[in-house]
Image (cartoon, rainbow, N blue to C red; front, side):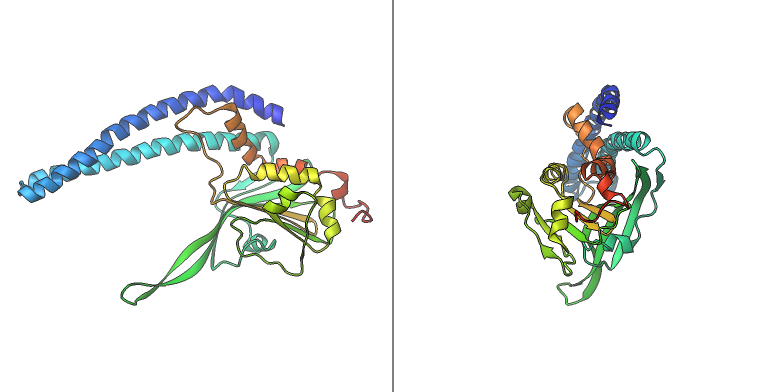
Length: 316
């Protein structure tokens, strides 16, 4: 997997670097014209007001400011278009190579029932789902989608009037994997920093032998033995390594014969370099984030014997 993707990145990298240079040049020209238009137009407009210049002068100066604002918006659009091109290529390449039979629906998300099932977040007053994808990798089926959870908040203004707004409290990407073996147990790994409301239920806190892992994550389980069976020290180390690639919080839960992973990062983990060249390493990091389902299937061994339906239960 890695070698093939690595070769694809090497092939396309010069193209994107050339595109970045052209986009940066256009971006600089637009801002170089737009910002002075805004500053000069605004200064002269206020001078014109104080000096009582003719109305036509005020109109022309206002148009100059508006033109500058438009140019700045166009510049932002140039930046955004380049970032979308790189992200789309990375996502499409991963899907074609690793998940060729994937089904996508950008207009829908996971069922709210499934988003709530692992107990990572409090129940929302309003839910938005998008960018749904379902596929199979190495015999393991999975689905993923973006989620956005909101709470209804009541506010009071300075005059004592009350009004309500919907406020985001969780936003990111959720992955759901399904394998054949039902362990009949629950194991949750929750990042401590920035921890949101979660459902602890009757789970017990478990300390692993990996001190760094314990500092970073809260591990809860219905049975401590299952934690050590599913999360070996090698897997814990790799989870720590992967978590560093995300900007927000990371949550994981084994429930019966399902694995849930949530990356609560407000969808900001993927950032395309703009002011500096796009390196091979940075591009591979972007590609790896889109390949997360395959990464975790291999990392956790979901495609291995212990997750098969007829695997012995004595080890658990």
